Image (tube, rainbow, N blue to C red):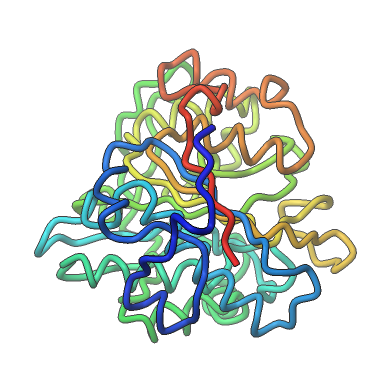
Length: 312
C-alpha cells in the first residue's frame, strides 16, 4: 500500500479547513493522484468520541478519501446530473448502522455540487416504509441541507430491462437512476444473513424491484446486477459497521465504531476491503469471487496500491 503521513496532508481544501486541521492531501497532491483506483481513510484522532465528533470525523474521512483519488472533479462534469445511491433500506437511526451514515452522504452531495454538478439526487428503494425510513436514517434531512433533491422512488416507474447476466436475464430497474450522468454507490458495511456481508456490489439491489427473486445463487445475481450498472465511483462507509443480525440490525450491541471511509473505482477491491473490516475472508464471499471472475475488479485490493491515510 501507498502510505501517506500526516505531514503530507497539511494543504487542506476550504471545506476541510472549516472543520479543523486533519490528515489528508491537498489539491496539488490530489492532482498527482488523479489516476488512483482506491483510497482508505482511517481515523486516528482518538477513540472516545462524542456523537458530534463522530459526525465531524465522518465528514473529514469522506473528503479525504475522495480527494486522494483525484477529487470529485475527476468524476463529475460541469452541468451534470448525479445520483447518490446510499443504503436507505431500514427504519433505523444512524447510530444502528443499518443505513449509510448521513454525514458521509451529505459530504458527497456537497462535493458534487462544488465540482459543478447541476443537480444531485439522493434515493434508494427501501424495504421499510420509505417516508419513515428516509426520515429516521437521517439521510433525507442531511441530503436536503447539503443541496440535494431527495427522491422517493415511484413503484409505477420501474421498467423491465435486459440484464443479460448469468442468472438474471431481465429485472425491473428504476430508469431515472441509470439515466443520470453518474451514479455514486455509497453503501454501509454490514452483516447480511444470506450474503454474509453487504457492501458496494449488493447495494445496487436498491435500484431494482423483485429482489426476492434473486436469493437463489445470490452471489452470482449480485455480480450480474453490478456488471449491468457499470460502476464508476463507490464510497464505502465504515464509520460504523453492523457486525450481526443484518441487514436490518436494531441492537446497539451489534454496532462497532471502525471510523473508516474508502473510495475508488474498483468495486471488487472495495468489497474485499469491507469484508476484511467485517472479519471475513474476501474469497469466502460469493459475490466478490464472481465479480472478479467477471472482470469487475481485483479481490486483492492491496495490489492496487491504495492511498492509505491517517486522518485526525
